[in-house]
Length: 163
Image (cartoon, rainbow, N blue to C red):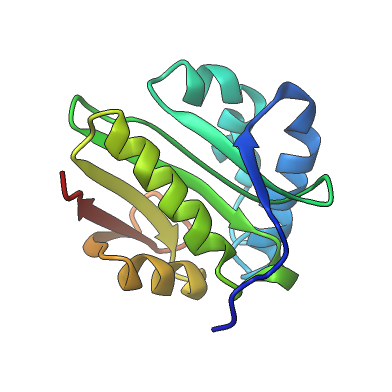
């Protein structure tokens, strides 16, 4: 795996980022054939209310910029008193496998730990193989798999943080 050498600036989401965030979300899912499997619109309502869904829920939504273009994103929110839920991890498909996702994951995990959470949960689809590898290489373990109610199999991961 080559490491990305260009300077990526990570910062908190701003309302004017919304269309670019939605575009990256859809593009990354289409790239893994995870988008066509179901009507994502009903599962993407959080992207219409990012501030309320994430920032106002003991979490955050972060974007990664390269030359003022959003090329990465990730978020987390409070699941319960000790657990954060990681969501919406996306990297521009042409820029994957260069360490950007790991940089973003490290940043979010540090924030999550700093907020006092001691564990992280997340899920990804069976189609998102690169995401599965990233999570497994960074200490996440498969908690369960679900197909009921979903048109595509979901893999749920969990990680206990070192405090």
